[in-house]
Length: 318
Ligand code: GLV
Image (cartoon, rainbow, N blue to C red):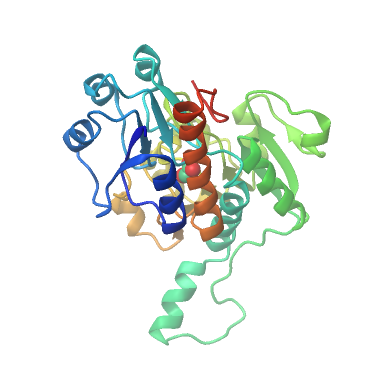
């Protein structure tokens, strides 16, 4: 049997399945493994099943045993893996697309609504039992019939657009390339990010993270947003420059911000935590049982296709 290291806990259903296919080294304690642990534990393994909070950087990849031929990431994003170095080491990398589209799109909408309707402040008032209905109490921004800008019109961005159409929103998007009409469904393409931002009363970030998209929202670009915009990021923390975003919130350029992902997570910029017009979640985008099982199955299938069946895995990204 081929041998596979699983760097964090897999949920039961997936764990049973993977044990039928591989000799498994499992980090059952779920404590974050150090680079050294990963290097040592993977000696003699053929593949590694990694998670989005494993930083598989160049130095770590260079120190991995030559027996490692595949890294199956349990996420659609793979910015946590240095693909250039993986290529040099001839390590194949896979992700888990498709299966988390709806779950993550739901969270994008939750962030937009939670931020725009001041859900966090509402909860605080409710808990403190010091509120009373009043005509101008906790007035938020209504999403219905507004313009929604989407950065990244891949599967998740398109699923966000589908839900937002139910709110009567006018959909605008920025993407590497324009979508065919059947996928665009009337959404308005903006080749330039600044053109998209200038239309975005509500903005949803759904593009990949990584080097190319780091700091996409910064001092320069944020100024194109209409005053009082609502922004949500369910993609990757590095896409937003936190300092510039905080400035934009403080001057009211951004009315409210919803975040599920963070620079350097699980750390969260302390300044964010001081602001009440932020609606924050701890990276829950794909966190439903159905989705997590499907992600696990997808990662296991990728390992199985490559290591046991000598096939090109379905979700190879490099
Ligand atoms: C989750 O964050 C993912 O990229 O799948």
